Amino acid sequence: MAVPTLAVSGLRVAIRGDEGVARILDHIALRLEAGRILGVVGESGCGKSTLIRAILGILPPAAEVAAGEILFEGEDLLAFSEAELNRNVRGSRISFIPQDPYLALNPLFTIGAQLLETMRWHAPGDRRGHRARLLELFRRVQLPDPEAALDRHPHQFSGGQRQRLLIAAALACAPRLVIADEPTTALDVTTQQQILRLLRELVDDLGIAMLFVTHDLGVVAELCDDVSVIYAGQTVESGPTAALLDRPLHPYTRALLACHPERSSGFVGIPGAVPSPLRAPPGCRFAPRCTSAHPACTTRAPAPQRPEPGRSVDCILHEVAA
Image (cartoon, rainbow, N blue to C red; front, side):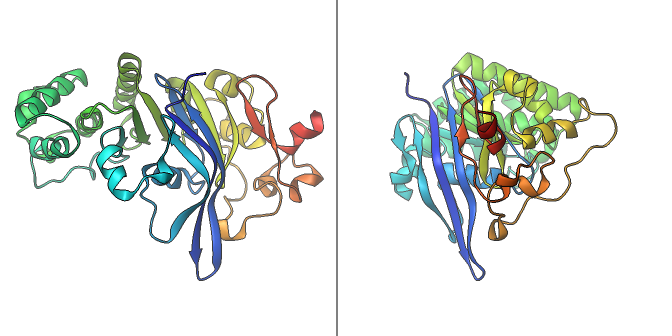
């Protein structure tokens, strides 16, 4: 079996504070192959941003990886020093597309000044070669008038154009993994569709791997090959996108799908809220909000079940069924 681009297993991230230790992530597992897009889905507060920070090695000072491993092309990222991550991983082999195209670019400098400086640190070659590479990428992401774009400031671009600039910037140093943090949230529907199609084309053409973090299962259905659903810092279900959306196994996944307007009539929500990491309930963390909870759900944490090839679900109901 080929070495995956990214493999996370048993990942636990804890934060120590005045009220005790909070496990922000407590059971995260995922696998991402080259040439594929993995969607990471969950409500706000489920740990998606913390997962990104853990992979990139930029957790806040109070947080630490307490258990698990993060393997990138077979190498343990947790064993890398800060200097090694800066020199050999972040910005070069792993790149990042942020959520807000309006905040990610410095308004005081031209696009060329910002992106060429990044390439100077992370990519081999000289300024002339870097400029040629950027112009090639600007054309690839269908940015109008690439030559003029280098000399413009961020405010001279629309939201969709800024997002294309950020995608080009993420590809500038030929990464093997791109992490995209809800990159279409701030865009209108038409522009969002254009960006999603562009991302799909780039992954297919370049053979890179993409971790796409989102709360929108509609976006997942359109873009992603595989899905990992997380709730309250834990992976609850994963599998190929089509199979998972057609037949969700975990009650939380079913509840998320019921919230989507294309799958429900009227407004449907999930009662309750994601629990605080400091006050996580015993047993299954979703049990207090679950309409299908079994008595054992409130006392015993579920073990991963693999009901069919390529799929995993952490739910006592599937243990009982088995």
